Image (cartoon, rainbow, N blue to C red; front, side, top):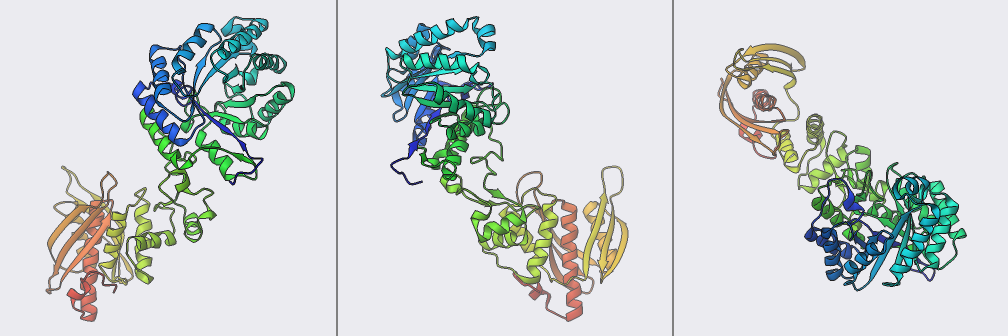
Length: 524
Protein backbone atom coordinates (compact mmCIF):
# COMPACT_ATOMS: atom_id res chain seq x y z
CA UNK A 1 0.00 0.00 0.00
CA UNK A 2 1.39 3.38 -0.93
CA UNK A 3 1.80 5.83 1.91
CA UNK A 4 -0.24 9.03 1.76
CA UNK A 5 -0.36 12.18 3.84
CA UNK A 6 -3.31 10.69 5.75
CA UNK A 7 -1.84 7.22 6.30
CA UNK A 8 -1.94 6.09 9.93
CA UNK A 9 0.31 3.51 11.51
CA UNK A 10 -1.18 0.49 13.25
CA UNK A 11 1.38 -0.27 15.95
CA UNK A 12 2.22 -3.97 16.31
CA UNK A 13 2.82 -4.72 19.97
CA UNK A 14 4.21 -8.25 20.17
CA UNK A 15 3.66 -10.13 23.41
CA UNK A 16 4.94 -13.54 22.30
CA UNK A 17 7.63 -13.48 24.99
CA UNK A 18 5.24 -12.43 27.76
CA UNK A 19 1.65 -13.53 27.19
CA UNK A 20 2.71 -16.15 24.64
CA UNK A 21 5.16 -17.76 27.04
CA UNK A 22 2.37 -18.11 29.59
CA UNK A 23 0.96 -20.93 27.46
CA UNK A 24 0.91 -24.17 29.46
CA UNK A 25 4.09 -26.15 28.88
CA UNK A 26 6.19 -23.30 27.48
CA UNK A 27 9.26 -22.26 29.44
CA UNK A 28 11.88 -20.39 27.43
CA UNK A 29 15.37 -19.81 28.78
CA UNK A 30 17.28 -16.56 28.31
CA UNK A 31 19.04 -17.75 25.14
CA UNK A 32 15.79 -18.85 23.52
CA UNK A 33 14.08 -15.58 24.40
CA UNK A 34 16.99 -13.64 22.93
CA UNK A 35 16.77 -15.66 19.72
CA UNK A 36 13.06 -14.94 19.34
CA UNK A 37 13.50 -11.26 20.26
CA UNK A 38 16.19 -10.83 17.60
CA UNK A 39 13.85 -12.36 15.02
CA UNK A 40 11.00 -10.10 16.13
CA UNK A 41 13.32 -7.15 15.53
CA UNK A 42 14.05 -8.43 12.01
CA UNK A 43 10.33 -8.88 11.51
CA UNK A 44 9.87 -5.20 12.32
CA UNK A 45 7.49 -5.25 15.28
CA UNK A 46 7.11 -1.87 16.96
CA UNK A 47 7.12 -3.16 20.54
CA UNK A 48 8.43 -6.31 22.19
CA UNK A 49 6.80 -7.07 25.52
CA UNK A 50 9.79 -9.04 26.76
CA UNK A 51 8.32 -10.42 29.96
CA UNK A 52 7.00 -9.84 33.47
CA UNK A 53 10.18 -8.99 35.44
CA UNK A 54 8.70 -9.39 38.92
CA UNK A 55 7.45 -12.92 38.15
CA UNK A 56 10.82 -14.64 38.63
CA UNK A 57 14.56 -14.06 38.55
CA UNK A 58 14.72 -15.89 35.23
CA UNK A 59 12.10 -13.61 33.71
CA UNK A 60 13.95 -10.55 35.00
CA UNK A 61 17.22 -11.76 33.51
CA UNK A 62 15.61 -12.48 30.14
CA UNK A 63 13.98 -9.03 29.94
CA UNK A 64 17.25 -7.39 31.00
CA UNK A 65 19.23 -9.35 28.39
CA UNK A 66 16.80 -8.40 25.62
CA UNK A 67 16.85 -4.75 26.69
CA UNK A 68 20.64 -4.84 26.66
CA UNK A 69 21.12 -6.38 23.21
CA UNK A 70 18.08 -6.04 20.94
CA UNK A 71 17.82 -2.82 18.98
CA UNK A 72 14.98 -1.48 16.87
CA UNK A 73 11.70 -2.20 18.66
CA UNK A 74 10.74 -0.53 21.93
CA UNK A 75 11.32 -2.98 24.80
CA UNK A 76 8.42 -3.23 27.22
CA UNK A 77 8.00 -4.88 30.60
CA UNK A 78 4.71 -5.73 32.29
CA UNK A 79 4.00 -4.64 35.85
CA UNK A 80 1.25 -4.77 38.40
CA UNK A 81 0.34 -1.52 40.18
CA UNK A 82 2.55 -1.95 43.27
CA UNK A 83 5.54 0.38 43.27
CA UNK A 84 7.97 -2.47 43.93
CA UNK A 85 6.73 -4.19 40.73
CA UNK A 86 7.19 -0.99 38.75
CA UNK A 87 10.67 -0.40 40.17
CA UNK A 88 11.71 -3.95 39.26
CA UNK A 89 10.25 -3.57 35.78
CA UNK A 90 12.25 -0.39 35.17
CA UNK A 91 15.44 -2.04 36.39
CA UNK A 92 14.94 -4.81 33.81
CA UNK A 93 14.21 -2.59 30.79
CA UNK A 94 16.53 0.31 31.63
CA UNK A 95 19.38 -0.80 29.27
CA UNK A 96 17.10 -0.55 26.21
CA UNK A 97 17.53 2.38 23.86
CA UNK A 98 13.73 2.84 24.00
CA UNK A 99 11.54 1.40 26.73
CA UNK A 100 7.97 1.24 27.99
CA UNK A 101 6.37 0.22 31.27
CA UNK A 102 3.01 -1.52 30.91
CA UNK A 103 0.89 -1.26 34.07
CA UNK A 104 -2.35 -3.18 34.59
CA UNK A 105 -5.08 -3.71 37.14
CA UNK A 106 -8.41 -5.53 36.87
CA UNK A 107 -11.62 -3.50 36.63
CA UNK A 108 -14.34 -6.16 36.31
CA UNK A 109 -16.57 -6.84 39.36
CA UNK A 110 -15.55 -10.51 39.32
CA UNK A 111 -11.82 -9.75 39.43
CA UNK A 112 -12.08 -6.89 41.94
CA UNK A 113 -14.13 -8.98 44.36
CA UNK A 114 -12.56 -12.40 44.05
CA UNK A 115 -8.97 -11.72 43.01
CA UNK A 116 -7.98 -8.22 44.12
CA UNK A 117 -10.26 -8.03 47.19
CA UNK A 118 -10.46 -4.28 46.46
CA UNK A 119 -13.27 -1.76 46.16
CA UNK A 120 -13.74 0.35 43.00
CA UNK A 121 -12.34 3.41 44.81
CA UNK A 122 -9.22 1.46 45.76
CA UNK A 123 -8.73 0.34 42.16
CA UNK A 124 -9.02 3.95 40.98
CA UNK A 125 -6.41 5.05 43.48
CA UNK A 126 -4.07 2.17 42.57
CA UNK A 127 -4.27 2.98 38.88
CA UNK A 128 -3.50 6.66 39.44
CA UNK A 129 -0.58 5.93 41.76
CA UNK A 130 0.92 3.23 39.50
CA UNK A 131 0.85 5.29 36.32
CA UNK A 132 2.34 8.27 38.14
CA UNK A 133 5.13 6.06 39.51
CA UNK A 134 5.89 4.62 36.06
CA UNK A 135 6.04 8.13 34.59
CA UNK A 136 8.85 8.96 37.01
CA UNK A 137 10.96 6.52 34.96
CA UNK A 138 9.74 6.98 31.38
CA UNK A 139 7.38 9.06 29.26
CA UNK A 140 6.16 5.87 27.54
CA UNK A 141 3.61 4.30 29.87
CA UNK A 142 0.81 1.94 28.87
CA UNK A 143 -2.18 1.16 31.07
CA UNK A 144 -4.58 -1.81 30.83
CA UNK A 145 -7.87 -2.39 32.69
CA UNK A 146 -7.77 -6.18 32.92
CA UNK A 147 -10.95 -8.04 31.95
CA UNK A 148 -12.27 -4.96 30.17
CA UNK A 149 -14.90 -6.90 28.24
CA UNK A 150 -16.68 -7.82 31.49
CA UNK A 151 -16.09 -4.51 33.27
CA UNK A 152 -18.78 -1.95 33.99
CA UNK A 153 -18.28 0.51 31.16
CA UNK A 154 -18.74 3.70 33.20
CA UNK A 155 -16.35 2.57 35.92
CA UNK A 156 -13.76 1.38 33.41
CA UNK A 157 -13.85 4.78 31.71
CA UNK A 158 -13.28 6.45 35.09
CA UNK A 159 -10.16 4.31 35.57
CA UNK A 160 -8.94 5.03 32.05
CA UNK A 161 -9.45 8.76 32.59
CA UNK A 162 -7.39 8.62 35.78
CA UNK A 163 -4.63 6.77 33.89
CA UNK A 164 -4.52 9.43 31.18
CA UNK A 165 -4.56 12.25 33.74
CA UNK A 166 -1.50 10.72 35.39
CA UNK A 167 0.47 10.37 32.17
CA UNK A 168 -0.48 7.12 30.37
CA UNK A 169 0.12 7.54 26.64
CA UNK A 170 -1.42 4.23 25.57
CA UNK A 171 -4.70 2.79 26.81
CA UNK A 172 -4.86 -0.91 26.09
CA UNK A 173 -8.29 -2.52 26.28
CA UNK A 174 -7.94 -6.27 26.93
CA UNK A 175 -10.57 -8.91 26.25
CA UNK A 176 -8.74 -11.00 28.82
CA UNK A 177 -11.02 -14.03 28.72
CA UNK A 178 -12.04 -13.91 25.04
CA UNK A 179 -15.62 -13.00 25.94
CA UNK A 180 -16.32 -10.28 23.37
CA UNK A 181 -17.76 -10.48 19.88
CA UNK A 182 -16.65 -8.21 17.02
CA UNK A 183 -19.68 -5.91 16.87
CA UNK A 184 -19.80 -5.22 20.62
CA UNK A 185 -16.00 -4.93 20.83
CA UNK A 186 -15.95 -2.30 18.10
CA UNK A 187 -18.74 -0.43 19.87
CA UNK A 188 -16.81 -0.50 23.13
CA UNK A 189 -13.60 0.77 21.52
CA UNK A 190 -15.49 3.54 19.73
CA UNK A 191 -17.33 4.52 22.91
CA UNK A 192 -14.08 4.74 24.92
CA UNK A 193 -12.66 7.21 22.43
CA UNK A 194 -15.80 9.30 22.78
CA UNK A 195 -15.92 9.16 26.58
CA UNK A 196 -12.24 9.45 27.57
CA UNK A 197 -10.60 12.72 26.56
CA UNK A 198 -6.88 13.13 26.13
CA UNK A 199 -3.89 12.53 23.89
CA UNK A 200 -3.39 8.77 23.89
CA UNK A 201 -3.18 5.76 21.58
CA UNK A 202 -6.03 3.30 21.91
CA UNK A 203 -4.91 -0.34 21.89
CA UNK A 204 -6.63 -3.72 21.83
CA UNK A 205 -5.56 -7.06 23.32
CA UNK A 206 -7.83 -10.00 22.46
CA UNK A 207 -7.87 -13.62 23.53
CA UNK A 208 -9.17 -16.48 21.45
CA UNK A 209 -11.47 -18.41 23.78
CA UNK A 210 -14.36 -18.14 21.29
CA UNK A 211 -12.08 -18.18 18.24
CA UNK A 212 -12.66 -14.43 17.72
CA UNK A 213 -9.34 -12.88 18.75
CA UNK A 214 -8.31 -11.79 15.26
CA UNK A 215 -11.84 -10.74 14.31
CA UNK A 216 -12.17 -8.68 17.49
CA UNK A 217 -8.75 -7.09 16.97
CA UNK A 218 -9.62 -6.06 13.41
CA UNK A 219 -13.00 -4.76 14.57
CA UNK A 220 -11.15 -2.62 17.10
CA UNK A 221 -8.86 -1.28 14.37
CA UNK A 222 -11.90 -0.34 12.30
CA UNK A 223 -13.29 1.44 15.38
CA UNK A 224 -10.13 3.52 15.89
CA UNK A 225 -7.62 1.38 17.78
CA UNK A 226 -4.14 2.07 16.50
CA UNK A 227 -2.19 -0.52 18.46
CA UNK A 228 -2.82 -4.26 18.34
CA UNK A 229 -1.33 -6.61 20.94
CA UNK A 230 -0.72 -10.03 19.45
CA UNK A 231 1.60 -13.04 19.32
CA UNK A 232 3.35 -15.07 16.67
CA UNK A 233 1.20 -18.12 15.80
CA UNK A 234 -1.45 -16.82 18.20
CA UNK A 235 0.12 -18.60 21.18
CA UNK A 236 -0.96 -17.63 24.67
CA UNK A 237 -2.91 -18.73 27.71
CA UNK A 238 -5.84 -21.11 27.20
CA UNK A 239 -6.91 -20.76 23.53
CA UNK A 240 -4.23 -18.17 22.86
CA UNK A 241 -4.01 -14.58 21.65
CA UNK A 242 -4.71 -12.83 18.38
CA UNK A 243 -2.29 -14.12 15.73
CA UNK A 244 0.00 -11.37 14.50
CA UNK A 245 0.48 -12.81 11.02
CA UNK A 246 -3.27 -12.90 10.40
CA UNK A 247 -3.85 -9.32 11.57
CA UNK A 248 -0.94 -7.96 9.52
CA UNK A 249 -1.95 -9.73 6.34
CA UNK A 250 -5.62 -8.80 6.72
CA UNK A 251 -4.68 -5.12 6.85
CA UNK A 252 -2.23 -5.51 3.95
CA UNK A 253 -4.55 -7.63 1.79
CA UNK A 254 -7.75 -5.59 2.28
CA UNK A 255 -6.79 -1.90 1.95
CA UNK A 256 -10.33 -1.03 0.89
CA UNK A 257 -11.58 -2.26 4.29
CA UNK A 258 -8.72 -0.67 6.24
CA UNK A 259 -8.05 2.46 4.16
CA UNK A 260 -4.99 4.64 4.81
CA UNK A 261 -3.60 2.24 7.40
CA UNK A 262 -0.11 0.75 7.38
CA UNK A 263 1.91 -1.72 9.42
CA UNK A 264 5.70 -1.74 9.57
CA UNK A 265 6.10 -5.51 9.44
CA UNK A 266 8.56 -7.14 7.02
CA UNK A 267 6.07 -9.75 5.93
CA UNK A 268 8.71 -11.90 4.24
CA UNK A 269 9.89 -12.78 7.76
CA UNK A 270 6.48 -14.05 8.96
CA UNK A 271 6.95 -17.72 8.06
CA UNK A 272 10.47 -17.79 9.48
CA UNK A 273 9.25 -16.21 12.72
CA UNK A 274 6.45 -18.77 12.91
CA UNK A 275 8.83 -21.69 12.48
CA UNK A 276 11.25 -20.34 15.08
CA UNK A 277 8.57 -19.79 17.71
CA UNK A 278 7.13 -23.23 17.02
CA UNK A 279 10.54 -24.88 17.31
CA UNK A 280 11.59 -23.15 20.52
CA UNK A 281 8.25 -23.38 22.33
CA UNK A 282 7.44 -26.91 21.20
CA UNK A 283 4.01 -25.74 20.07
CA UNK A 284 3.31 -27.08 16.56
CA UNK A 285 1.60 -24.93 13.95
CA UNK A 286 -1.60 -26.50 12.66
CA UNK A 287 -1.27 -27.49 8.99
CA UNK A 288 -4.16 -25.28 7.90
CA UNK A 289 -3.08 -22.25 9.97
CA UNK A 290 -3.74 -19.06 8.04
CA UNK A 291 -0.71 -17.37 6.42
CA UNK A 292 2.03 -19.53 7.98
CA UNK A 293 0.59 -23.07 8.03
CA UNK A 294 2.21 -25.57 5.70
CA UNK A 295 -1.08 -25.97 3.80
CA UNK A 296 -1.85 -22.24 3.62
CA UNK A 297 -0.80 -22.18 -0.04
CA UNK A 298 -1.28 -25.85 -0.91
CA UNK A 299 -3.95 -27.04 -3.33
CA UNK A 300 -5.10 -30.61 -3.96
CA UNK A 301 -8.61 -30.28 -5.39
CA UNK A 302 -8.54 -30.71 -9.17
CA UNK A 303 -10.72 -27.66 -9.86
CA UNK A 304 -8.50 -25.48 -7.67
CA UNK A 305 -5.32 -26.81 -9.25
CA UNK A 306 -6.63 -26.17 -12.75
CA UNK A 307 -7.50 -22.61 -11.77
CA UNK A 308 -4.10 -22.04 -10.16
CA UNK A 309 -2.29 -23.26 -13.27
CA UNK A 310 -4.18 -20.71 -15.37
CA UNK A 311 -4.10 -17.79 -12.93
CA UNK A 312 -2.87 -17.92 -9.29
CA UNK A 313 -5.34 -15.27 -8.13
CA UNK A 314 -8.22 -17.67 -8.78
CA UNK A 315 -7.59 -19.36 -5.45
CA UNK A 316 -4.85 -17.36 -3.69
CA UNK A 317 -5.40 -13.89 -2.23
CA UNK A 318 -1.79 -13.49 -1.10
CA UNK A 319 1.58 -14.18 -2.69
CA UNK A 320 3.17 -16.97 -0.62
CA UNK A 321 6.61 -15.46 -1.20
CA UNK A 322 5.40 -12.20 0.36
CA UNK A 323 4.95 -13.94 3.72
CA UNK A 324 8.11 -16.03 3.51
CA UNK A 325 6.48 -19.26 2.37
CA UNK A 326 8.27 -21.33 -0.27
CA UNK A 327 5.54 -20.79 -2.84
CA UNK A 328 2.36 -22.34 -4.13
CA UNK A 329 2.19 -26.12 -3.78
CA UNK A 330 -0.01 -28.22 -6.02
CA UNK A 331 -0.30 -31.35 -3.90
CA UNK A 332 -0.88 -34.51 -5.89
CA UNK A 333 -3.42 -36.66 -4.11
CA UNK A 334 -6.72 -38.37 -4.76
CA UNK A 335 -8.53 -35.05 -5.34
CA UNK A 336 -6.07 -33.83 -8.00
CA UNK A 337 -7.03 -33.41 -11.61
CA UNK A 338 -5.41 -34.27 -14.94
CA UNK A 339 -4.10 -30.72 -15.46
CA UNK A 340 -2.10 -30.73 -12.21
CA UNK A 341 -0.85 -34.26 -12.91
CA UNK A 342 0.41 -33.29 -16.37
CA UNK A 343 1.94 -30.07 -15.03
CA UNK A 344 3.82 -31.96 -12.31
CA UNK A 345 5.24 -34.36 -14.90
CA UNK A 346 6.22 -31.48 -17.19
CA UNK A 347 8.15 -29.82 -14.35
CA UNK A 348 10.04 -33.09 -13.96
CA UNK A 349 10.88 -33.10 -17.67
CA UNK A 350 8.42 -35.89 -18.51
CA UNK A 351 6.33 -35.18 -21.59
CA UNK A 352 3.59 -37.71 -22.22
CA UNK A 353 0.25 -37.28 -23.90
CA UNK A 354 -2.66 -39.08 -25.44
CA UNK A 355 -3.40 -42.63 -24.38
CA UNK A 356 -0.23 -42.92 -22.32
CA UNK A 357 -1.16 -39.82 -20.29
CA UNK A 358 -4.66 -41.19 -19.80
CA UNK A 359 -3.35 -44.57 -18.65
CA UNK A 360 -0.80 -42.99 -16.31
CA UNK A 361 -3.46 -40.68 -14.85
CA UNK A 362 -5.79 -43.61 -14.25
CA UNK A 363 -3.04 -45.46 -12.37
CA UNK A 364 -2.23 -42.28 -10.46
CA UNK A 365 -5.82 -42.00 -9.22
CA UNK A 366 -5.79 -45.67 -8.19
CA UNK A 367 -2.59 -45.23 -6.18
CA UNK A 368 -3.68 -41.88 -4.71
CA UNK A 369 -6.64 -43.61 -3.08
CA UNK A 370 -4.13 -45.60 -1.02
CA UNK A 371 -1.29 -43.17 -0.53
CA UNK A 372 -2.10 -39.73 0.88
CA UNK A 373 0.44 -37.83 -1.20
CA UNK A 374 2.61 -38.94 -4.11
CA UNK A 375 6.15 -37.62 -4.44
CA UNK A 376 8.16 -36.90 -7.59
CA UNK A 377 9.86 -40.27 -7.19
CA UNK A 378 6.46 -41.96 -7.06
CA UNK A 379 5.41 -40.19 -10.27
CA UNK A 380 8.59 -41.16 -12.06
CA UNK A 381 8.07 -44.80 -11.17
CA UNK A 382 4.40 -44.64 -12.15
CA UNK A 383 5.17 -43.19 -15.59
CA UNK A 384 7.97 -45.70 -16.11
CA UNK A 385 5.46 -48.45 -15.41
CA UNK A 386 3.09 -47.10 -18.06
CA UNK A 387 5.86 -46.47 -20.57
CA UNK A 388 7.01 -50.04 -20.15
CA UNK A 389 4.19 -51.60 -22.14
CA UNK A 390 1.62 -51.11 -24.87
CA UNK A 391 -1.50 -49.07 -24.19
CA UNK A 392 -3.86 -51.71 -25.61
CA UNK A 393 -3.68 -54.63 -23.20
CA UNK A 394 -4.67 -58.20 -23.86
CA UNK A 395 -4.69 -58.76 -20.11
CA UNK A 396 -5.91 -56.47 -17.31
CA UNK A 397 -6.02 -56.99 -13.58
CA UNK A 398 -9.50 -56.65 -12.10
CA UNK A 399 -9.08 -57.96 -8.54
CA UNK A 400 -6.56 -59.89 -6.50
CA UNK A 401 -7.00 -61.42 -3.05
CA UNK A 402 -4.11 -63.29 -1.43
CA UNK A 403 -3.71 -65.20 1.83
CA UNK A 404 -0.54 -66.46 3.44
CA UNK A 405 1.28 -66.95 6.70
CA UNK A 406 3.15 -69.68 8.56
CA UNK A 407 0.22 -72.11 8.86
CA UNK A 408 -1.86 -72.02 5.67
CA UNK A 409 -0.65 -72.60 2.14
CA UNK A 410 -0.35 -69.25 0.31
CA UNK A 411 -3.36 -68.81 -1.97
CA UNK A 412 -4.35 -66.22 -4.58
CA UNK A 413 -7.86 -65.53 -5.83
CA UNK A 414 -7.58 -63.63 -9.09
CA UNK A 415 -9.99 -61.95 -11.51
CA UNK A 416 -8.64 -60.73 -14.85
CA UNK A 417 -9.89 -59.54 -18.19
CA UNK A 418 -8.45 -61.79 -20.90
CA UNK A 419 -9.13 -60.42 -24.38
CA UNK A 420 -12.21 -58.63 -23.02
CA UNK A 421 -13.60 -61.59 -21.09
CA UNK A 422 -13.54 -61.72 -17.30
CA UNK A 423 -11.80 -64.81 -15.92
CA UNK A 424 -11.53 -65.87 -12.26
CA UNK A 425 -9.10 -68.48 -10.92
CA UNK A 426 -7.62 -69.65 -7.61
CA UNK A 427 -4.09 -70.92 -7.25
CA UNK A 428 -1.58 -71.90 -4.60
CA UNK A 429 2.14 -71.18 -4.48
CA UNK A 430 5.31 -71.23 -2.41
CA UNK A 431 4.50 -67.68 -1.27
CA UNK A 432 1.88 -65.05 -1.96
CA UNK A 433 3.81 -63.63 -4.93
CA UNK A 434 4.26 -67.12 -6.41
CA UNK A 435 0.57 -67.87 -5.84
CA UNK A 436 -0.43 -64.66 -7.63
CA UNK A 437 1.85 -65.34 -10.60
CA UNK A 438 0.63 -68.96 -10.85
CA UNK A 439 -2.97 -67.70 -10.94
CA UNK A 440 -2.06 -65.23 -13.70
CA UNK A 441 -0.50 -68.04 -15.77
CA UNK A 442 -3.64 -70.11 -15.38
CA UNK A 443 -5.94 -67.22 -16.33
CA UNK A 444 -3.94 -66.23 -19.43
CA UNK A 445 -2.79 -69.67 -20.53
CA UNK A 446 0.75 -68.32 -20.96
CA UNK A 447 3.45 -70.69 -19.72
CA UNK A 448 7.10 -69.94 -19.00
CA UNK A 449 9.38 -68.94 -16.18
CA UNK A 450 10.60 -65.83 -14.37
CA UNK A 451 14.29 -65.27 -15.05
CA UNK A 452 14.74 -62.24 -12.80
CA UNK A 453 12.76 -60.52 -10.06
CA UNK A 454 13.59 -57.30 -8.18
CA UNK A 455 11.54 -55.27 -5.72
CA UNK A 456 12.49 -51.79 -4.52
CA UNK A 457 10.91 -49.12 -2.33
CA UNK A 458 10.31 -45.93 -4.30
CA UNK A 459 10.24 -43.71 -1.21
CA UNK A 460 10.44 -44.11 2.55
CA UNK A 461 7.59 -44.57 4.99
CA UNK A 462 5.05 -47.26 5.69
CA UNK A 463 2.98 -46.20 2.67
CA UNK A 464 5.93 -46.30 0.26
CA UNK A 465 5.29 -47.61 -3.23
CA UNK A 466 6.80 -50.97 -4.13
CA UNK A 467 8.42 -50.95 -7.58
CA UNK A 468 8.76 -54.49 -9.00
CA UNK A 469 10.80 -55.23 -12.11
CA UNK A 470 10.96 -58.74 -13.54
CA UNK A 471 12.05 -60.69 -16.61
CA UNK A 472 10.04 -63.52 -18.14
CA UNK A 473 10.72 -66.12 -20.83
CA UNK A 474 7.71 -67.82 -22.34
CA UNK A 475 7.67 -71.50 -23.21
CA UNK A 476 8.10 -70.63 -26.89
CA UNK A 477 11.20 -68.53 -26.20
CA UNK A 478 9.86 -64.94 -26.08
CA UNK A 479 11.92 -62.92 -23.58
CA UNK A 480 10.30 -59.79 -22.12
CA UNK A 481 10.37 -57.60 -19.02
CA UNK A 482 7.61 -56.07 -16.93
CA UNK A 483 7.24 -53.43 -14.28
CA UNK A 484 4.55 -52.90 -11.63
CA UNK A 485 3.86 -50.31 -8.98
CA UNK A 486 1.66 -50.44 -5.88
CA UNK A 487 1.65 -49.82 -2.15
CA UNK A 488 1.29 -53.63 -1.89
CA UNK A 489 4.27 -55.76 -2.92
CA UNK A 490 2.13 -58.69 -4.10
CA UNK A 491 -0.07 -56.45 -6.23
CA UNK A 492 3.01 -54.71 -7.68
CA UNK A 493 4.43 -58.12 -8.56
CA UNK A 494 1.17 -59.18 -10.23
CA UNK A 495 1.05 -55.97 -12.24
CA UNK A 496 4.67 -56.42 -13.34
CA UNK A 497 3.94 -60.00 -14.43
CA UNK A 498 0.81 -58.96 -16.34
CA UNK A 499 2.79 -56.17 -18.06
CA UNK A 500 5.32 -58.77 -19.21
CA UNK A 501 2.58 -61.13 -20.47
CA UNK A 502 0.99 -58.27 -22.43
CA UNK A 503 4.29 -57.94 -24.28
CA UNK A 504 4.30 -61.66 -24.99
CA UNK A 505 0.77 -61.38 -26.39
CA UNK A 506 1.77 -58.46 -28.59
CA UNK A 507 4.80 -60.28 -29.97
CA UNK A 508 2.64 -63.27 -30.83
CA UNK A 509 -0.01 -61.07 -32.46
CA UNK A 510 2.26 -58.76 -34.48
CA UNK A 511 5.60 -60.51 -34.71
CA UNK A 512 7.21 -57.33 -33.34
CA UNK A 513 10.73 -57.54 -31.95
CA UNK A 514 10.34 -57.85 -28.13
CA UNK A 515 13.57 -55.90 -27.66
CA UNK A 516 11.95 -52.93 -29.41
CA UNK A 517 9.00 -53.17 -27.05
CA UNK A 518 11.32 -53.12 -24.08
CA UNK A 519 13.24 -50.02 -25.14
CA UNK A 520 12.81 -47.17 -22.63
CA UNK A 521 10.29 -44.58 -23.74
CA UNK A 522 8.51 -46.83 -26.23
CA UNK A 523 4.87 -45.64 -26.29
CA UNK A 524 3.31 -48.54 -28.17
